[in-house]
Image 1 (spheres, one colour):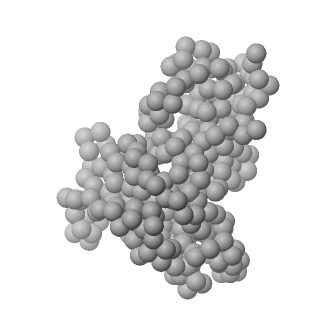
Image 2 (cartoon, helix red, strand yellow):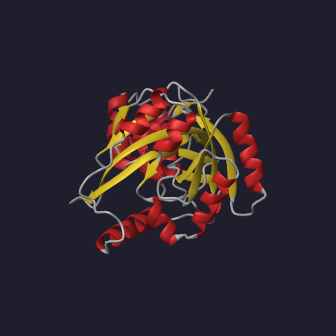
Length: 304
């Protein structure tokens, strides 16, 4: 029997380490990254329908497409073709993760859609096949399925889970409108070609941040955070520098641009520190959205 509706959710991510290597023949850059899933979730609700219909509510709903450009639409078609079923469904996306923010909101939506549609259609696709489908949809989608903490290689889709037993607390502040990920990577290439950034001959080691996540205090993690995309994001959006300084001036142990930005991820000591920091930064007038979050949290899961 087909259920009336199925609900799934998936988390945002922060790249606590992001080293970008050379441009590959397939147009992607070689990456070494450490993903960290945090307690900011998008929710996908699937119900019956003729053909596909996608709707979006919540944060940035007006800028998220509802047609074939949306990863959720592509996820539905891909899963249906893989399983040999009709792609009939009404899919509602309730967004709490800002769009184009460096938090993998679109990837979270796609991961949640795969999980929800697999249950709704009764396709019973195994986890290994879901992972392969996720990798076809985007570099961050496999991690959105997995959650927790993981080391990503290749273009980010090849994952090795990382043991990180300690809860960490963050404040996520989105400074200004979204940034295009291809534009930030393009700026990185331009700055490297101009000699204004070190070359891409080697990928920085993730060992320090992994060691800090496994057993170190928050201060140790703060000292290990790294993101090769931060400088090009700052070049495209100079006011991000003010946002980073505001976070550390207000008491964050460290702050970095998450992924390609423009979200600033500020690491703090504990939950009460996160609440205080978010309240203080709300008065600065730099950030469009502010959220106190924690992690690591699981990846895409059914709700209810």
